[in-house]
Image 1 (cartoon, helix red, strand yellow):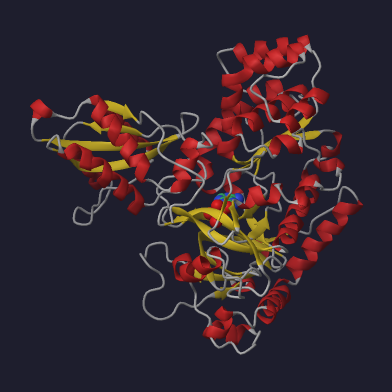
Image 2: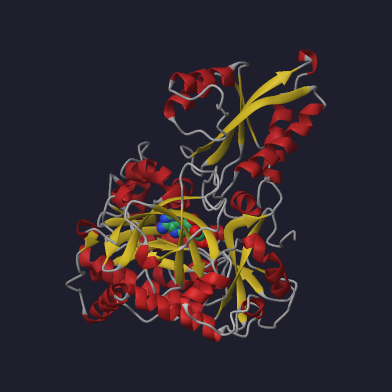
Length: 598
Ligand code: AMP
């Protein structure tokens, strides 16, 4: 149970009538967390009692927790592959869910190099919308006056494809932005945005970003908050401004639109918004032509009260850069969600990034928690692991999140490790610790050790012709560039110095690695421009031995020492960088198309 000091206080007072209802909903749902969880599980199991999956495990229509826990196994995506493939191929029988699968949501987590396909049902949109509807009422408790201006949010849709059976497959946010839930959302004075729907819904990422930036610049005094889903997205917008401010200022000066904007919907919108504003254009040109962009966000958007971006998990690496561009504005992480299910929200969104905790909303799905032993390779070895219910998790302990959803995932391991920080009423609050098995991440890409190893092996094939091999390697996500990029440190053994691999050959190795990395990485490189060209830094012979000496000097055991496949500790980076003899970049984009390879 929660200790008293870890229970947060009631929410209030609300900013308006509508907020009062939302806050009351949060209070009631979290106060009755266990009863809500019991009801959610019973609903999911009773409506899906006749599905092939639940019948297979002989649940026989039971809807109680004990029976459920005793017969339904905990699974991963790989376990569900055959069912998912059948649905993707057009089998419309009730395999996982009694409600028809409306589409697949393509997760940024991958399986065999391709995005995972998460089945979803139409009514999940209501649940997502419900969670979104709670965010501003909570924010209004901490930041007054958000109804006096607008939000500049950089939001994007991504490519969609169809499965062989004809179901759409696309990211969850693309699905949400294209839904009527988003497009015809009722006017809310506390949640007015500068970006027109037409700009958000344009699939061409340049036109979408350009028009969203233009609208944000024109309404610069109105903007009270700036945001994107992830920190990397907001920094990409700043980089876009660096590269395109001349043309943007030109459009504002003349009241005409860049000829590269060809989308008719966007052109109509901009025609309504744009008029010649030479003073504004001068101001933007003056600010943007300065060499020093420190504090650029508050210079251009002086009324910004906070940045609304996720900076927890892998995104924490962007906090210093965001602070640089914003002069240290508060960073608000408002929600925690995934393609499988939207989980919960931050009830104290203006807290420091390191203190962010998400309260899981018990109405969203049935949640269980697998105790996570940080130092054991596999916490499920031996006897069957005991999963803990939402209200029974313990403060200070770490767990892996396991969900049962209305769309038909049963005891599914999400792969996120969370630490309990406290409770709001009887609903626990979690610090996002990390996603399991992620070595490198720049944007939504997630590369694990096996994928990096495979990419390495492919690239080092090229070196064979030069009688050269890679003795050791490690990697690093370099976010000092925008977009960030993967850096791979290589120590080479060149057996025939007269025939050593040239600069061009090593560049080709960079591309060969990129070609092997998963489709989320390649999409980031090709379609989203959210990841820069991969870099190989060749280090002097003996560098990895020095790395080992360093680790041992800091207490590592000589017998158990393993080369870390990813590094981010400054002294180690400094050591590696001081031994670099040459640097090489991918000379081209890897292959990527929206169609899946399998
Ligand atoms: P996707 O299914 O591609 O939308 O990715 C969902 C995953 O993104 C989650 O399982 C988390 O690993 C990560 N994620 C989502 N929201 C947050 C957050 N607020 N903080 C940290 N990581 C997050």
